[in-house]
Structure formats: structure tokens, C-alpha cells
Amino acid sequence: KQEVTQIPAALSVPEGENLVLNCSFTDSAIYNLQWFRQDPGKGLTSLLLIQSSQREQTSGRLNASLDKSSGRSTLYIAASQPGDSATYLCAVKYSGAGSYQLTFGKGTKLSVIP
Amino acid sequence: NAGVTQTPKFRVLKTGQSMTLLCAQDMNHEYMYWYRQDPGMGLRLIHYSVGEGTTAKGEVPDGYNVSRLKKQNFLLGLESAAPSQTSVYFCASSFPTEYHHFGNGTRLTVT
Image: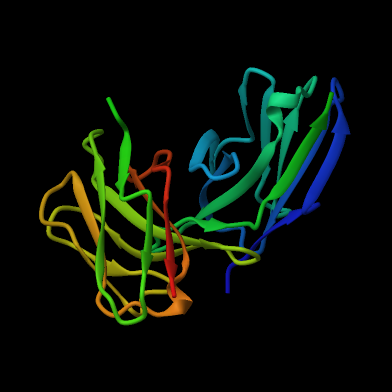
């Protein structure tokens, strides 16, 4: 079964710190990988999408990298702010006929302390 | 441009009752999905659709039915609700290779 793992499950950092969230996946035959943010009681907000042919994507203070050969992606957040506090989810779209769904990790809950 | 809209936002059902969750998107996306999110389990796909008039089973389809009569709408039905279906339900839509866009969810409690 294809799985997506996110470590750590929770992370607490002081404001201003740079941080890295990790995502690993079991099968390198992926189509794309997406990072989402989820605030309590809310839906998911798309942050970055990396196609399988790409190595990284950047948006503002966020940078996501993809290494298919090692089955890993990282989300780098620069100069963290209290407003970054949320749960961050990694999701993989695997390749193959009939593969339409995203396989989600269980998320990393980030707390940025003022 | 509302994106993905889910109704209702909250619902409490008694075991055996039925209900329909509505998802509407205004982005002309071909693909639509229903996920459920449970503590410790992450998001799991229930059913999905790759176009008007088509539906297919996902990872956890038992106890649910879906219909996509119009491109912009995707309905999720529970014919006989069970406590195990207590969850937060999310609808999403996308073009085939692009971002999933999610609604804000429906919190369902079955007593």
C-alpha cells in the first residue's frame, strides 16, 4: 500500500526561526506532490504543488523540494510568524492508470510562539 | 468566484437516518472528490468523479453513494447513517494535473 509519512507530528518554534517540515513517500512513481495548510475547523488551503519533473517550488517565505529517488519532500518556512501556526499536510498523487486520488500524510501541527 | 462550496456545514443524524451532502464548484473543474477526515487517520478518499455522469470508488466507499448529474455539482449520500460515519467530510475539485481545491468541510455526527 502506498503511504505518506510526516515527521514530526507536532513542532513548536519561537517566532522568527526558520524551519523544515518533512514528508516521505513509499513509491517513487509519483505524478505530483502538494503541500496544504489546514487551520482548526477549516478546509485545506493549497500552498505549493511540485510536478514529478520539478525539484522545487517557491512561494513567498515557503520553499518546497522534491527528491523522488529518496522518496522525500521538505517544506521550508523562512522567518516563521505566529500566523503560520496550523497543520501542514503533504499529499502525493501517484502515477498509474486510474490513479486520480491524493494520498495524504497525517500532518505536522506547527505552533509558532510569539 | 466562490471556489468549492459545501452544504450543510454541520449536521447531527440518528443511526439509520439518511442525508445528502452537496458540493458545488464554479471553476469548471472536470474532477471532483469526496474525502473524510478522522483523527489519527488523515484524509481518505470516499468516491470521486472524472466528469459529468461518471463516478468511481475510492479507498473507503462502503455506506456511501454519489452522483454527478451536473459538472459543477457532486453529491454524497448516506442511505442509513452509522456512528462509524461520524467524521468531517471534505469535497475537492481539480483539473487533472493541477491543485486540488477544497471546501470548508461538513462536520457530521451520527448518534
